[in-house]
Length: 133
Image (cartoon, rainbow, N blue to C red):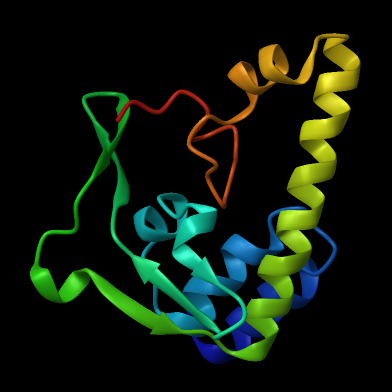
């Protein structure tokens, strides 16, 4: 994808709930599996950084957390301000979505949490809903 295509994609995705995971690879060079493997403990908005410590891989039709292939792939990445803003907004949206699911399930928070996201993935999609560690 060239620069013009990336700009078009990001402009079209601006109001989509998955804008942050599309912005990260374009802005930082992160791979898709690295983005999908992020947890909120990996993201440091105060210092404008994130840590790449794992990735999400598809192996024989299963989604599994793995470690990056090389030592250099485990790294700290500086985030542009627009990525920090997008991730912050994404976390707020994700928290609101969890609260809605709890209300819809009419279950106490502890029980509702079991079907939301026990690993606190930063980027939660239908793709990584059934991930094994």
